[in-house]
Amino acid sequence: MTTAVARATRRRLGVDLAGSINLIGSLLKYFSLAFVFPVVVALWYGETPVPFLVAGAISAAVGGGLELVSRGKERIGAREGYLVVALLWLLVPAVSALPYLLASEAQLSRPIDAYFEAMSGLTTTGSSVLTDIEGVDRSLIMWRQFTQWVGGVGVIVLAIAVLQRLRVGGRHLLQTEAPGPEFDSLAETVRDTSKRFVVLYIVLTLAQLGILVLFGLTGVDERMDFFEALAHTFATIPTGGFGIHARSVEEFAPATQWVIALFMFVAGINFALMYRSVFRRTLRPFGRDEEFRFYCAFAALGSLILFLELVTEDIASGTAALRHAVFNTVSMMTTTGFASTDFNLWTPLAALTLVALMFVSASAGSTAGSIKVIRHVAIFKVLRRELDQTLHPELVSPLRINRRVIDERALRGVVAFALLYVGTFALGSIALLIEGARVDAELGVFEAIAASATTIGNVGPGFGFAGPMGSFEPFSDVAKAIMVALMWIGRLEIIPVVVLFTRSYWRN
Image (cartoon, rainbow, N blue to C red):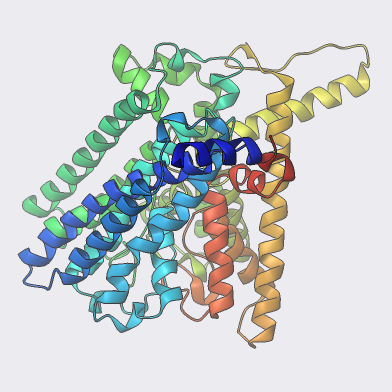
């Protein structure tokens, strides 16, 4: 009977709702295992594990319940994929917010604040409503950091194994239409593909953790104990950027900041490209990849602009100016959001440069958010071809990336994404300005633009009171809800969300 109803529903709507719910329930059930980690941390530090145990039980019960009342996750195809990823990225933050609500932490006792913090963590955004981070229990802080790391795993799976098959995510330019060398022998199934990149993700995590712990043991950075090292590694590799100090990473030794900058940069590289390079034991794929070359060029240009601005305006000098320029360029560009100093106090040119870097982003197939470098490369080539064809109308010039012809349909998709992204960002900025005026908040135009850009790009810090050493707590509940929606839309790269609101999606 249940199967017959499910088939009838699928025929009527064109979407297998029962199968989608079944898959969501299964994934939510397995997500409950993530709560084991903060339970161990709580017991280690003599804190109560009850919030995590209850949250894990609720997650398992809800997920198991959805699985029991539905069937058919094995039937899920690309059509249902849009619905599954969109709903899953709403439900997982909901259960992840439960420990914040169940713990005796006044800063996260309100549902909107708890959900904001959870969504920010799992989308690897790094924006925070906390105003007294040092006052939060260690187990709750580590759960907050861990949500970023878990979210980063989800982002890798989403970017490499799911969105590619939904023709979203940028890197499908090379995979679907013209497979690049780094994709030739990767497994076709989501499960097998994901395993390879998750292993690489774990290796990078262990590498950074090992270096930071070594710094603490050898006295290179006396502040860097194991807890600090683990917390900041959990925020770096997924390009999340949650800090556990009010001053972000400002108080750590220069060597620590350089290491974090290095791993932020590495985490912004396409994981498929890294995997192929490791598999072949050669750096040649990096040199051949256009996206990687542009990624390096953008990072170098941003660092140079900030360095010159810091030096000429007497904000910093010498190696300190270089470190702050490189660190904050890489942090904004990879959408991590750490800060080595309060760039909120820098000049207008420096502020504009940092906001511009939020839109540049890192590589497709990485844990970074925002537009992605591969799309900038494609748009640049489209614009250059249009100029050439204006001068020579008879010119026929197929576009190539990595010496492979890109299908015109894929290029149209890139332009459509860019327009949707900029349009959503603009609407978010206007909505935040209107809400700020309604509640008489101290929110200027630039601050609203920065808040919209940082949340839709999953970057983290903004400017003004939401700067790198500030908090998003002063925003109204409505403004926080707007930014939660921007984080969600930005993390899913807009298309899977927009598709759900089209009439054709629900038709046969």
